[in-house]
Length: 271
Image (cartoon, rainbow, N blue to C red; front, side, top):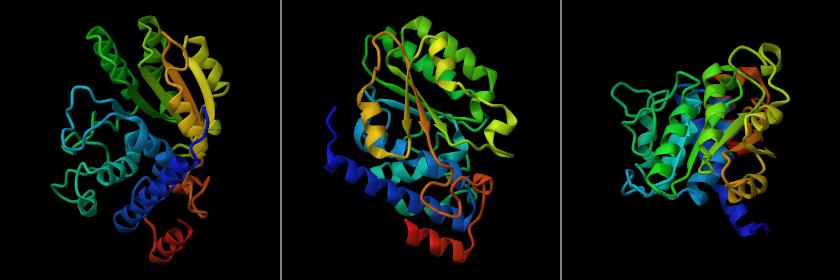
Protein backbone atom coordinates (compact mmCIF):
# COMPACT_ATOMS: atom_id res chain seq x y z
CA UNK A 1 0.00 0.00 0.00
CA UNK A 2 1.32 3.43 -0.91
CA UNK A 3 1.62 5.88 1.98
CA UNK A 4 -0.78 8.82 1.88
CA UNK A 5 1.41 11.47 3.47
CA UNK A 6 -1.49 13.88 3.96
CA UNK A 7 -3.49 11.23 5.82
CA UNK A 8 -0.51 10.33 8.02
CA UNK A 9 0.08 13.98 8.86
CA UNK A 10 -3.57 14.56 9.79
CA UNK A 11 -3.64 11.47 11.99
CA UNK A 12 -0.39 12.47 13.70
CA UNK A 13 -1.83 15.91 14.42
CA UNK A 14 -4.98 14.36 15.87
CA UNK A 15 -2.91 11.98 18.00
CA UNK A 16 -1.08 14.98 19.45
CA UNK A 17 -4.41 16.58 20.36
CA UNK A 18 -5.54 13.39 22.07
CA UNK A 19 -2.29 13.17 24.03
CA UNK A 20 -2.80 16.74 25.23
CA UNK A 21 -6.23 15.76 26.56
CA UNK A 22 -4.63 12.84 28.39
CA UNK A 23 -2.02 15.16 29.90
CA UNK A 24 -4.77 17.48 31.13
CA UNK A 25 -6.56 14.56 32.78
CA UNK A 26 -3.30 13.40 34.38
CA UNK A 27 -2.70 16.91 35.69
CA UNK A 28 -6.20 17.24 37.12
CA UNK A 29 -6.93 13.88 38.73
CA UNK A 30 -4.10 11.56 37.79
CA UNK A 31 -4.53 8.61 35.45
CA UNK A 32 -2.80 5.70 33.76
CA UNK A 33 -1.04 8.14 31.48
CA UNK A 34 1.78 5.86 30.30
CA UNK A 35 -0.39 3.24 28.63
CA UNK A 36 -2.82 5.87 27.38
CA UNK A 37 0.02 7.66 25.59
CA UNK A 38 1.47 4.45 24.16
CA UNK A 39 -1.84 3.36 22.63
CA UNK A 40 -2.89 6.78 21.29
CA UNK A 41 -1.61 6.31 17.73
CA UNK A 42 -3.52 3.04 17.35
CA UNK A 43 -6.75 4.50 18.74
CA UNK A 44 -6.39 7.57 16.53
CA UNK A 45 -5.95 5.55 13.34
CA UNK A 46 -8.95 3.38 14.18
CA UNK A 47 -11.40 6.12 15.13
CA UNK A 48 -10.37 8.75 12.63
CA UNK A 49 -9.84 6.62 9.54
CA UNK A 50 -10.56 2.92 9.66
CA UNK A 51 -13.64 2.26 11.76
CA UNK A 52 -17.16 2.61 10.42
CA UNK A 53 -18.89 4.50 13.24
CA UNK A 54 -21.52 7.20 13.62
CA UNK A 55 -21.25 9.60 16.59
CA UNK A 56 -24.91 10.51 16.10
CA UNK A 57 -25.92 6.84 16.22
CA UNK A 58 -23.45 4.96 18.45
CA UNK A 59 -25.49 1.74 18.17
CA UNK A 60 -25.42 1.70 14.36
CA UNK A 61 -25.86 -1.95 13.42
CA UNK A 62 -23.25 -1.72 10.66
CA UNK A 63 -20.62 -0.21 12.94
CA UNK A 64 -17.19 -1.63 13.57
CA UNK A 65 -16.41 -2.49 17.18
CA UNK A 66 -13.41 -1.53 19.28
CA UNK A 67 -12.96 -3.05 22.72
CA UNK A 68 -10.30 -1.49 24.91
CA UNK A 69 -9.54 -4.58 26.97
CA UNK A 70 -6.69 -2.76 28.76
CA UNK A 71 -9.36 -0.55 30.24
CA UNK A 72 -7.14 1.47 32.57
CA UNK A 73 -5.85 3.44 29.57
CA UNK A 74 -9.32 4.75 28.78
CA UNK A 75 -8.40 8.48 28.94
CA UNK A 76 -7.03 8.12 25.39
CA UNK A 77 -10.28 6.51 24.24
CA UNK A 78 -12.49 9.09 25.95
CA UNK A 79 -10.43 11.83 24.30
CA UNK A 80 -10.74 10.20 20.87
CA UNK A 81 -14.49 9.76 21.24
CA UNK A 82 -14.85 13.39 22.29
CA UNK A 83 -12.79 14.62 19.34
CA UNK A 84 -14.83 12.35 17.07
CA UNK A 85 -18.07 13.97 18.28
CA UNK A 86 -19.63 11.35 20.55
CA UNK A 87 -19.84 13.92 23.37
CA UNK A 88 -18.53 17.44 24.01
CA UNK A 89 -14.80 17.80 24.53
CA UNK A 90 -15.53 20.00 27.55
CA UNK A 91 -17.19 17.08 29.32
CA UNK A 92 -13.81 15.36 29.71
CA UNK A 93 -13.20 17.72 32.64
CA UNK A 94 -15.58 15.57 34.71
CA UNK A 95 -13.27 12.53 34.50
CA UNK A 96 -13.58 10.46 37.69
CA UNK A 97 -15.84 13.00 39.37
CA UNK A 98 -18.89 11.84 41.32
CA UNK A 99 -21.71 10.82 38.94
CA UNK A 100 -19.53 11.36 35.86
CA UNK A 101 -19.95 8.97 32.94
CA UNK A 102 -16.15 9.04 32.59
CA UNK A 103 -14.95 6.51 35.14
CA UNK A 104 -11.34 5.47 35.55
CA UNK A 105 -12.13 2.33 33.55
CA UNK A 106 -14.54 2.18 30.58
CA UNK A 107 -18.22 2.34 31.39
CA UNK A 108 -20.98 1.87 28.85
CA UNK A 109 -22.66 5.00 30.18
CA UNK A 110 -20.30 6.87 27.87
CA UNK A 111 -21.47 6.86 24.22
CA UNK A 112 -19.17 4.85 21.98
CA UNK A 113 -17.91 2.49 24.68
CA UNK A 114 -18.63 -1.11 23.66
CA UNK A 115 -17.65 -2.96 26.84
CA UNK A 116 -17.02 -2.12 30.48
CA UNK A 117 -13.49 -3.34 31.03
CA UNK A 118 -10.93 -2.96 33.77
CA UNK A 119 -10.74 -6.48 35.10
CA UNK A 120 -8.06 -7.59 32.67
CA UNK A 121 -8.21 -10.57 30.35
CA UNK A 122 -11.82 -10.56 29.19
CA UNK A 123 -11.96 -8.26 26.17
CA UNK A 124 -10.68 -10.73 23.59
CA UNK A 125 -13.26 -13.36 24.57
CA UNK A 126 -16.09 -10.84 24.26
CA UNK A 127 -14.69 -9.54 20.99
CA UNK A 128 -14.51 -13.08 19.66
CA UNK A 129 -18.17 -13.60 20.58
CA UNK A 130 -19.16 -10.45 18.71
CA UNK A 131 -17.13 -11.54 15.69
CA UNK A 132 -18.82 -14.96 15.70
CA UNK A 133 -22.26 -13.33 15.86
CA UNK A 134 -21.44 -10.93 13.03
CA UNK A 135 -20.24 -13.82 10.87
CA UNK A 136 -23.38 -15.83 11.66
CA UNK A 137 -25.51 -12.89 10.51
CA UNK A 138 -23.56 -12.60 7.27
CA UNK A 139 -22.43 -9.06 8.12
CA UNK A 140 -19.06 -7.43 7.52
CA UNK A 141 -18.45 -5.53 10.77
CA UNK A 142 -14.87 -5.66 11.99
CA UNK A 143 -14.02 -6.22 15.66
CA UNK A 144 -10.84 -4.70 17.08
CA UNK A 145 -9.63 -5.66 20.55
CA UNK A 146 -6.76 -3.73 22.14
CA UNK A 147 -4.96 -5.74 24.80
CA UNK A 148 -2.01 -4.89 27.01
CA UNK A 149 1.23 -6.80 27.26
CA UNK A 150 0.85 -7.27 31.00
CA UNK A 151 -2.76 -8.25 30.39
CA UNK A 152 -1.87 -11.16 28.15
CA UNK A 153 -0.28 -12.89 31.10
CA UNK A 154 -3.92 -13.77 31.87
CA UNK A 155 -4.83 -17.30 30.78
CA UNK A 156 -8.27 -16.23 29.56
CA UNK A 157 -6.61 -14.27 26.75
CA UNK A 158 -4.99 -17.44 25.44
CA UNK A 159 -8.23 -19.41 25.66
CA UNK A 160 -9.76 -16.86 23.28
CA UNK A 161 -6.63 -16.85 21.13
CA UNK A 162 -6.88 -20.62 20.78
CA UNK A 163 -10.59 -20.54 19.94
CA UNK A 164 -10.79 -17.72 17.40
CA UNK A 165 -9.00 -19.49 14.51
CA UNK A 166 -11.38 -22.43 14.90
CA UNK A 167 -14.17 -20.09 13.77
CA UNK A 168 -12.14 -18.58 10.90
CA UNK A 169 -12.70 -15.08 12.27
CA UNK A 170 -10.97 -12.92 9.70
CA UNK A 171 -13.14 -10.05 10.98
CA UNK A 172 -11.35 -10.13 14.35
CA UNK A 173 -8.20 -8.13 15.07
CA UNK A 174 -6.22 -8.35 18.32
CA UNK A 175 -3.83 -5.45 18.81
CA UNK A 176 -1.20 -5.91 21.51
CA UNK A 177 0.08 -2.64 22.98
CA UNK A 178 3.56 -3.97 23.71
CA UNK A 179 5.01 -1.08 25.73
CA UNK A 180 7.17 -3.38 27.89
CA UNK A 181 5.86 -2.22 31.28
CA UNK A 182 3.08 -3.26 33.63
CA UNK A 183 2.00 -1.93 37.01
CA UNK A 184 4.87 -3.08 39.18
CA UNK A 185 7.84 -3.59 36.86
CA UNK A 186 9.01 -4.30 33.34
CA UNK A 187 7.06 -7.13 31.71
CA UNK A 188 10.26 -9.12 31.12
CA UNK A 189 10.93 -9.10 34.86
CA UNK A 190 7.45 -10.37 35.77
CA UNK A 191 6.61 -12.92 33.08
CA UNK A 192 8.49 -12.68 29.75
CA UNK A 193 6.29 -12.90 26.66
CA UNK A 194 8.75 -13.43 23.82
CA UNK A 195 8.68 -14.93 21.28
CA UNK A 196 5.25 -13.28 21.28
CA UNK A 197 4.55 -13.35 17.54
CA UNK A 198 5.34 -17.06 17.40
CA UNK A 199 2.85 -17.75 20.18
CA UNK A 200 0.00 -16.14 18.23
CA UNK A 201 1.07 -17.85 15.01
CA UNK A 202 1.09 -21.23 16.75
CA UNK A 203 -2.61 -20.79 17.55
CA UNK A 204 -3.41 -20.08 13.90
CA UNK A 205 -3.45 -16.28 13.75
CA UNK A 206 -2.05 -14.15 10.95
CA UNK A 207 0.53 -11.95 12.67
CA UNK A 208 2.33 -8.73 11.87
CA UNK A 209 4.73 -6.73 14.03
CA UNK A 210 4.96 -2.95 13.81
CA UNK A 211 6.20 0.14 15.57
CA UNK A 212 2.89 1.09 17.15
CA UNK A 213 3.95 4.72 17.55
CA UNK A 214 4.82 5.13 13.86
CA UNK A 215 1.57 6.26 12.29
CA UNK A 216 2.58 5.12 8.81
CA UNK A 217 3.19 1.59 10.07
CA UNK A 218 -0.06 1.58 12.03
CA UNK A 219 -2.03 2.68 8.98
CA UNK A 220 -0.34 0.13 6.73
CA UNK A 221 -1.11 -2.73 9.14
CA UNK A 222 -4.76 -1.74 9.63
CA UNK A 223 -5.25 -1.28 5.89
CA UNK A 224 -4.17 -4.89 5.40
CA UNK A 225 -7.00 -6.46 7.43
CA UNK A 226 -7.60 -9.34 7.16
CA UNK A 227 -3.93 -10.17 6.83
CA UNK A 228 -5.02 -13.65 5.68
CA UNK A 229 -8.46 -14.89 4.68
CA UNK A 230 -10.21 -17.12 7.22
CA UNK A 231 -7.72 -16.19 9.96
CA UNK A 232 -7.96 -13.63 12.76
CA UNK A 233 -5.18 -11.06 12.75
CA UNK A 234 -2.85 -10.21 15.62
CA UNK A 235 -0.91 -6.96 15.41
CA UNK A 236 2.04 -6.84 17.80
CA UNK A 237 2.48 -3.09 18.25
CA UNK A 238 5.83 -2.25 19.82
CA UNK A 239 5.18 1.02 21.64
CA UNK A 240 6.76 3.30 24.23
CA UNK A 241 5.14 3.80 27.61
CA UNK A 242 4.44 7.51 28.03
CA UNK A 243 5.11 8.22 24.34
CA UNK A 244 5.53 11.91 23.54
CA UNK A 245 6.60 13.15 26.98
CA UNK A 246 10.32 12.70 27.59
CA UNK A 247 10.27 12.33 31.37
CA UNK A 248 7.59 9.63 31.16
CA UNK A 249 8.87 7.59 28.23
CA UNK A 250 9.79 4.00 29.14
CA UNK A 251 9.38 4.75 32.84
CA UNK A 252 7.48 2.50 35.25
CA UNK A 253 6.37 5.61 37.08
CA UNK A 254 4.24 6.47 34.04
CA UNK A 255 1.89 3.55 34.69
CA UNK A 256 -0.19 5.80 36.95
CA UNK A 257 0.71 9.29 38.03
CA UNK A 258 -0.59 12.78 38.68
CA UNK A 259 1.45 15.45 36.96
CA UNK A 260 2.73 18.50 38.80
CA UNK A 261 2.11 21.96 37.28
CA UNK A 262 5.75 22.07 36.14
CA UNK A 263 5.52 18.63 34.55
CA UNK A 264 2.26 19.55 32.86
CA UNK A 265 3.81 22.65 31.33
CA UNK A 266 6.76 20.65 30.02
CA UNK A 267 4.47 17.95 28.62
CA UNK A 268 2.41 20.51 26.72
CA UNK A 269 5.60 22.03 25.27
CA UNK A 270 6.82 18.65 24.07
CA UNK A 271 3.49 17.74 22.48
